[in-house]
Figure (cartoon, rainbow, N blue to C red):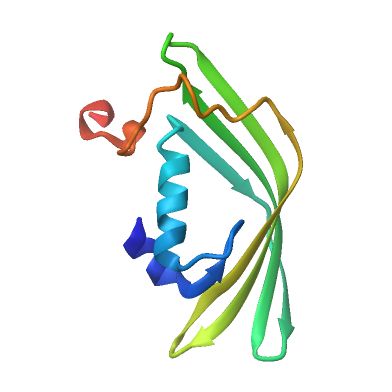
Length: 129
């Protein structure tokens, strides 16, 4: 995941906390390990040029499934928006800032009593056939 974030974000990209690309990868990895499945439905972005930068704003609905230790499933559904700032670096564009706004949520994200998935459980070859 660190290589992926490095390819699309600048080292000083800002997330929920101010952090570098490597720190962001650790934060996201720890969060995603708690999820059996995630699905982010992102609407078409509105894009505007602001000087030498580009801002993209899009609505998002994010579903997170977690498997509790007793086998039951927890669902956390979040609705909000992404606000990304891109900057041209060399021949490409990099995300230099991402702000996420959560307008509302159904359910709760659980960090205790859930199974952890350090690898993409749903993408395991033996499950895909």
